[in-house]
Length: 114
Length: 112
Image 1 (cartoon, one colour):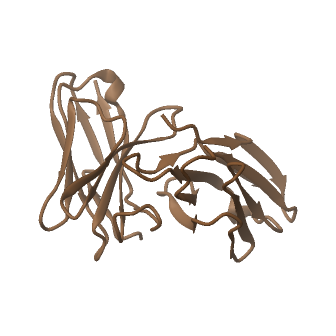
Image 2 (tube, rainbow over the protein chains, first blue to last red; image 1 turned 180 degrees about the vertical axis):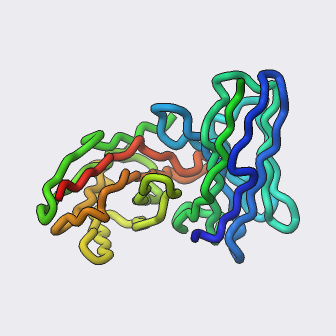
Image 3 (tube, chains in turn purple, orange; image 1 turned 180 degrees about the horizontal axis):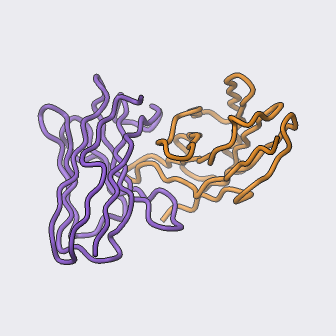
């Protein structure tokens, strides 16, 4: 058990809808990363937060947004959903903001857009 | 977009044999290189974080080396066991605001 909690485990929704994915980092970790894994794709980096502030940004669509709250949990908001947004979304946390700390991954949220 | 390549894509190895695979990354602006093991139905688990050229790390039968000047890292598994079957991911950071970029992984199957 990595100590990172993601909810929900599964989410099925229709095109055009909006969903929120939630992540609680491992106790003591200040940084949260969001990754997307689509079919036949590797882990695509979306965004990183450190202690409430955005630290790094990857190929995150404008329809997607995220934030990290004072209690360090994070939410990833996906809006105007399209079929192609169906994927496994991982949250990972690390102790510090730099990339010389290992990432601890949650079990992911499987999003299906119909 | 950073290019992180892993080879081979998949690998079948006989139990007891040793094996290795490669992660290639941009040789400029190196900051860190990570290796993860991802077993089916689980989440990726960190193996190593390497930050210095020439770094060698070891964890049991698994070890890794790093060459930042030429932009590659090798992962070695000695005396493969069935429980080593997994996808092995590397991830590269060039620092800055690019985060950590993952390769697509090497899918390793150990045959009894």
